[in-house]
Every structure is written in structure tokens, then in C-alpha cells.
Length: 412
Image (cartoon, rainbow, N blue to C red; front, top):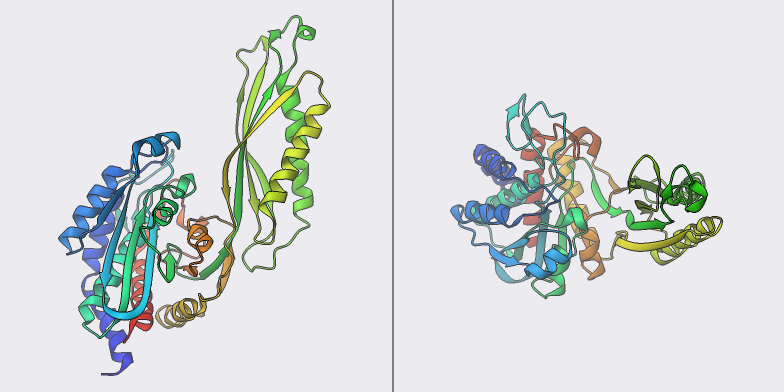
């Protein structure tokens, strides 16, 4: 039997079972996983039930409550499905995350509805990345249904901590020795194979002054004025960052954003404390240690210009950039070949300005790539915005690409 016929058989199985795949994704979207608050164990239980109905007994790895609570979340249970073929081949892990940001306002379709309109499935995580719970599961099912001689193992890693940095998702599984694959494929979109991504540094800055009545402001120290000076110094860096260009296609330049700020007690009170949280995106060429040191230096210099102001700085997250690792080319080549065939257009490799859990696998020396079901850009998917959705035709074809790629890597 020719290899081409095997590919066609995979495609045909996925076509025949596509309604079932869509129903699986709808069921996943209909169980909320808003993070925060991060009570995600119920979704893992539901996912495990659905997998068991398909013949997959998922290992449930509950992260201890004290670790989860210390992290600011409520519950995390990560799942691993292992499918062993003949000995002698690679172990290939497929990772997608089930946790998502809260839906927010402005939806015209229910954020947990899984509603299908004009060939699009709507709901929070429909595109990022419960869609790849579906694409990866049904790619594996198609591969097994083929009955071809295969060598190696496939693992499905369904984890629940990407929004908070992944340390209690893939990071926890890897740290505890629960998995060590040879190759890793992680959730992505259908029209590019991503091999690199930005790093991210998040920090909480607390500016302390001294409260006073607004009628006698000289008796206090205005923490907000000190915070404004610090913020101006930080934002001024963005002009310099734009002069630094990454050599990775798809990644432009570093950037700093302040996403949250709060402080003061009342309109007629000089504020004694202001807290803000910043997000610094780092291109793959940057050194995270040097980046953090420079930001701390800028904050200290700006605060020193305001007598009486003191500052506390807390690092919230340090996600290192993903750089291509030697050994990922066989995975990248297979994905590009089959995606180009299935989608009928060239599928490039690129980087992404996002940061993902994939870096955690990379830090353990596991070559990786990012590919899955979704549109050309995050913006098109409405991820993290109202009316997040997935074009079902992209789901079908991405599943075929992943199944074909697994066949190439595992064929005896």
C-alpha cells in the first residue's frame, strides 16, 4: 500500500468523524475555565470522561492544593494520555492548554455556548486552545484507526496553567519526571509553523509615600506623583525598544506595557500608595537577566528624584523566549509539507510575539514546534476578546496535517 494512500485514508477517517470532533470541542467549550479564578479541575474531569468514551484512559495529575493556592489559583489537574506503538521510535507529545482568560463583555454569542454559525464555532477557548484538544485527539484516533505498522509513542498533554505562566502545567509535569518526550508539538494556528517566540517579564511595583489631607498636601508624600515619574521613565524606553529589531520573522521589537494600576484612598487624600503591574516582552535575542536589571535600575533612578518615595518590586513572571532547538527540523519539515498539501498554499515558519508553555519543554532540551487549528492571526480569532471563534474548516484540515505528520514520524 503506497504512502499516499495512507495519507488519504487518514484524511477520509477524519472527514467521516468530523461531526464527532466538533461535538467534542463544543463539550469542552461549554465547561468554563476562567483563569482567574482558575478552578480548572472540573474541566479536566470532564475531558477525561470524554476521552474515556473514546477508549483513552487519561492519567489525572492533580497539582497539590498548597502549590495551587500559593500561585493564586484554585485547582489544577493536568492530564496525560499515552499511546504506545512498537518499540524503537520517538516519543512525541502534543500539548494544548485548557485555561483561558475570563470572557469579558461584548459577546453576541454565548461565551460558553459552543454555538455554530456560518461554519464558525463560538466560545471562549474555541480557538486558543481547546481547539487543539480536539485536533490532537482526533489526529491520534485517525492514526490508530489506520492500523499501519508504527514505532514509538504519542502522548497527549492537556494542561491548565498557560495563562499564569505554565509552571504548574507542563512545568510541573516535567519537573516531577512525569514525561520526557523526544519531540513536542504545541497548540497553534494553521497557516504557519511557529519555531520561536518572545519572552515575557511581569513585575509588580509598589510605590510608597505618605497619606495626607488634600488641604495640607505638604504634610504628605504623593505616591502617585512618584509613580507617574516612574511610569514616564519606563514608557520612554519604548521609543528605544523600537530601534531594536529581532532577526526572527514574525517578531518585531521589545515592548513594555503597564496593564494595571491602583492606589489612593479617596479624592481628598494625598495617595500614600500606588501599585502597578508591568509586562515587558523580550525578543529571543535579549538576555532576561539584563532586561530585569535595567528595569529595576530605571525605577530606582526615577524614584530617587522624589524625596520620601520608596519602592518595592516583585517579579511576577519570567517566561524565557523560545529559540529553535537542534532536532526540531524533522517535525517542522513534516508539518510544512503536509500543511502545504492540505491547505493548498505554502506554510512558512515564523516566530510569534506571544509567549507560550512551549518554552518550558525547550528549557528541558525537548525540540518543539507550534502548530494547530486556527486562523492566520490571533486578531482574526478574537482570542482574549469577545466572540472568540474557530473556523471549522481550519479545524478539519489542521487535524489532517497533524495526523499525517505523526504518521511520518512514527512509521515503522
